[in-house]
Image 1 (cartoon, rainbow, N blue to C red):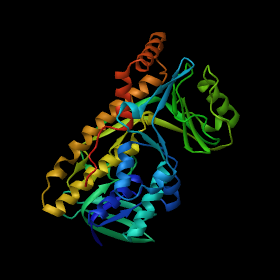
Image 2: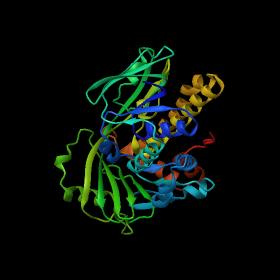
Image 3: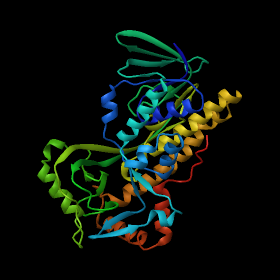
Image 4: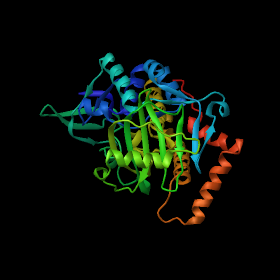
Length: 393
């Protein structure tokens, strides 16, 4: 088989790229190792930047987002027992964030892909990429017990941090990595959200975050050691710790309800440079990982996809490779700005195992300045809702 673009991975990056290319008249085949139900039901990120929401709307896949997603024009920073409002929209000319689960984004994109009739294959095994320096790179894989070979003009590696595409870039690639000495214990709970906005909490016992997924489902996290065993935590113990960290002096606290899902996620920062070699291009988690504190992973993937899709479409439209040559630099400029913000949010709000009382006092002072200075809050707001992006195709 032959296609113009072979896309490895049917997560949000791969599906969004496939849909964007379809809108621009470029053919693609999407290959995914997992089964459809697994991909569709993975509980992941839940905050979309204004840019990502606008891009989905522009591409015709934003109707359910605007119907069921929760638009938020502010967030809270909580410390020393008090919540402090950061008015995102007021500080950024009307921009906001949208609480809409990554699995819901995947469902919308999956439905859009199926409606186009373009190929989307699940449970693909033993995939490998070859000849990326030639005009006809190849993806080999097994499907339904048969060996398959797909030749492409380009390969898009959208297969995540543990995928096959990044290792195929070769030895000229450099990796930048930081592993954090903590993780997040996260839960989905059947409990109506008790706040109209997300609440980021700095506490002596460690970071905590109040979020939501719907008018009836709350999403909560708190900081734990990176290797914490989730089986050590009963539901009662989780709620006790959540309430201890999040309850404020005015009596605000999360609503308690049955826990539907719980897990521990380690945290890291990771960047691949460059994000391409030959005719293989990476997008999303295959190229970079950010700690979830800044809520940027899915949004950074959307930025990659927009610029990679534009570059590929320009090649077929004009025969020129200018945008393809610029893709890695363009994506990395955004990636490093996002890494900086995510690192800053992480080090500001978490307790580190090697810190001393000076560090704690400094963090509290930093938060005090942040919530009392319009300039400081504006910087936070601009980064949190997303730096400007031109979404015209």
